[in-house]
Image 1 (cartoon, rainbow, N blue to C red):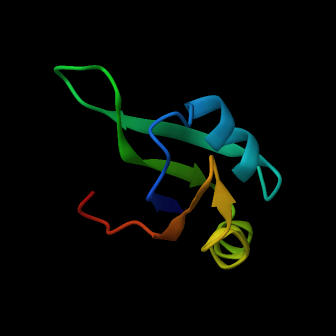
Image 2 (tube, rainbow, N blue to C red):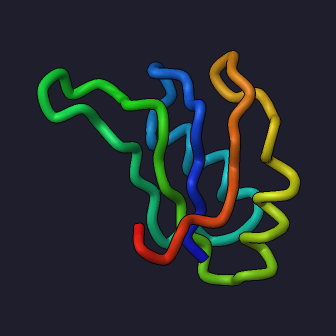
Length: 81
């Protein structure tokens, strides 16, 4: 399941994001969306966990938790994304 993570601190790295989600299951994909001009984080990213039950647990447990000093918003990504 592909998960959308929003409201990330601009200083959060893909490694940090992956580490937080890996506690719930094997990460197949982790991508922090970067601004093309500056190369800095846009404040959101995607994580994919193959096991849907583990992915749903990650969404429930991590939504609203603080990462990098900011409460993150976590939800299932739209299929079009």
